[in-house]
Length: 429
Ligand code: AMP
Ligand code: GLY
Image (cartoon, rainbow, N blue to C red; front, side, top):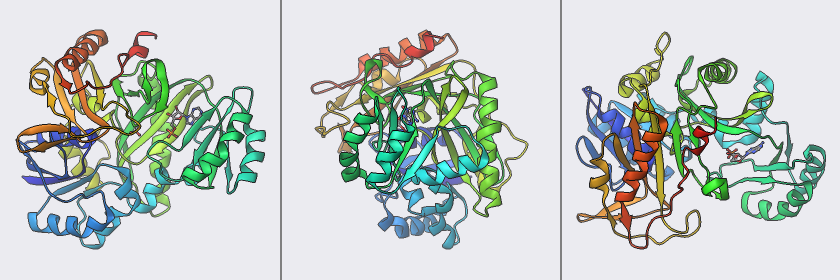
């Protein structure tokens, strides 16, 4: 029997904690700091924001005092800041998440470009640039009639990528991009195709790949219009990535990455997320993330059949070899309810109603992201507020309809913004 500590406060962390709580081996799930939906049942919010570097000491002290048996790091920022290395140095080894040297795979787009190049992993052509002049030359070289992509080198919360229709548009945008994200830029070939996300659990030597791929919906409006967000909804299995495609991604992308980190002496233990595009020449990597996707984690946790605690403990012990991940038959679909104005500025502190009614529907679970409790009142506290998620063994359309039925139960002052076409691509294949 063990207590688990989850670092983070979003829908991903709520979904991970919900799944971990289902393990008979787990007595309590502590969230640092969690949100308005994570406390209750086995869940307990603690008043430490573990995603901030200044709190790593307090997190270590909490793990020791509470005798936490497993710590799971949800978001990328504390991983990039070295929370796992910090805890290891304190003698705390039951931590699931990559060390800083491995977290560079997401934090540094130059690093991930080079490692893919070295391993022959299919990706977009690219040129690393250290100043605007280099970038202008690279844009002229890399752009085709279909345009070109500008990517910031560092972590930008998904905002540092600009897909341009022409070289001129890219050149015109460079100054603004530099002022927001710095002068180090990767200029990439623009690829075309449907996107999908593949996830693995790594133990330093091996990776178990989830047999279902998910599809996120990054643009804020229906039909993939408008600015990119953290993700407005996700569903799986994504028909664009049937089992043979997932197997190919496992063999050509996931395994080589984990083996390469082991060989470099910086073993990769944690979730590995390959953001993929199905191009005319087959699946190619758009980017890597060193954590679970959000919102993909919400439908993924509803479909995962195995005991997550057991898997993550095995990962931290380096004993995943010979195991496989299993998913339930059927589908899952998550519709994100966002505050109006997201991904721009939003009003916070609005009352939320109807979650219990939505949760009571068959196969529905409402995961919280930007919510907080004030006395007994549930209020909005961020851009993405809730992930309304449904699952079922029927066809995808019925699961999708059930998610939207649940969405209709929930309201806030002035209404939420959400996409009405989550999963629409599943009907086109
Ligand atoms: P990233 O943060 O690298 O996942 O990029 C955000 C989004 O930009 C992706 O989900 C894609 O829609 C788009 N994108 C990134 N790189 C490319 C590329 N090389 N070609 C086309 N679209 C891209
Ligand atoms: N779903 C996109 C992300 O987690 O980065």
